[in-house]
Length: 290
Image (cartoon, rainbow, N blue to C red; front, top):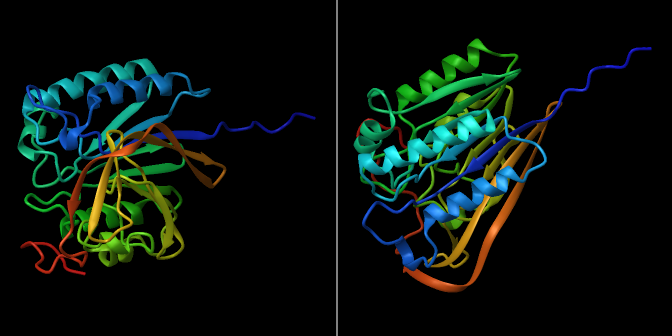
């Protein structure tokens, strides 16, 4: 009797918060190791994986306040990765990215007020959202972007949807981080409600965490490729050398997340004070509040 064909699990590599140093500057927060070298180490680690990825996603804070030339340098690396691993590489913006410089140095054309896209691999739809709002550490999703997302979700009810954005949604492990995360989580959850969700994947906070919210939606927050931040003390955050990325495995409707920790420092290299951990009081014009 002929057996069933076993489908290979889908592997998605998520790399977040690279904070690559602009040309002529020094790494932020007193890092002793070059963030570009940390990215190279991650790429080398991907080479050693038993299975090549089907998709690689950079979830924001690509260049730390960089120029168009810096984004051109990153684009060259991405192009090489796509050729070597024979897969798509998608990038999204974080709060430390400069939108105009990114549009000029990375993209062939200006996409407009936000940079969002989607792609399909088999029975899975991947959405890459833009939560950056200039001048804010926290993030929002504009009403037009939420409408765009909702339209495509409704048009593909049988596809499994995976959402990527820089800012994490509000969850039980992020109560100290309300000032910095996605500020209109309820608006996004309203769009996602009732759809076939595989999970929401983000970064920004520089530590890995997972939680379920909404209709038991998996939220997996990646650590940083550049440095780690200990945020357990609500008002005093401590920075350490660190480098990690995560692998998302999709197999017959099941989803798993594995963190690959390549560097884990034990010495505090910087610290900063947080005056208030509350949600942002004033919503930027054109965005929805909570």
